[in-house]
Image (cartoon, rainbow, N blue to C red; front, side, top):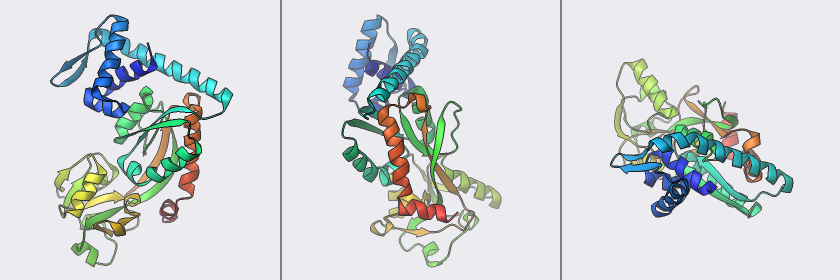
Length: 305
């Protein structure tokens, strides 16, 4: 039995679909299936059954699930202790991230990290905050960068930065011509592109409730890049983190500031505790904290508080 087999089983159990689980692990679906088949052959039982609705745990799978989690956790803890002896970061590092952070902060950061730690094999998975929390808690992810608050009590969060949300609007939109910041209550009747459950969406819903209107949502998506592109095509407006606007002159949308006191998001690095961190995870944790402190855009966001 290998850690890869246990990771494969836990990921499918979490996601409920082979395609999503394979993507999260950086495997092909056939490669994922081979890992699970090998595990089932070794155990002599079926753990999962494929159905039209997705992957379903068998009774044996339900019984094996908590043991698989504990086994992988014990393996991670033992590996972390051994790596502390060598002190040289190496091996795999599973990192989870919000889509906005993955697209606008991590490319430069990961490239610099790879140059400093060439022996670390980093795997990046992008998702929404609840899925990232679950991945860290299950041991599928070593670290995750997500927005606060963290809902799981078994996780440790270190705040990285705080930033305001701004309005992304199509080029030449009337709101751009106002030449001033706006309150959300002024713009609730605009057509909106939203990501359900996100900080901006909750702020919009609160503003609509204050005005006694229903949000005019023209599109829901789970991807920030899709949201941006829809705004660029004129479908509607969106509340986006300021991080997404750092290179906005090269993009086809305008930015309208929200009045002071408007919605903000806090971004944190989350893990299960220092005892679970490998040398590679500790190195990345230190690296990102130092990198964020050097980011002018993030420092300016903090300065606006």
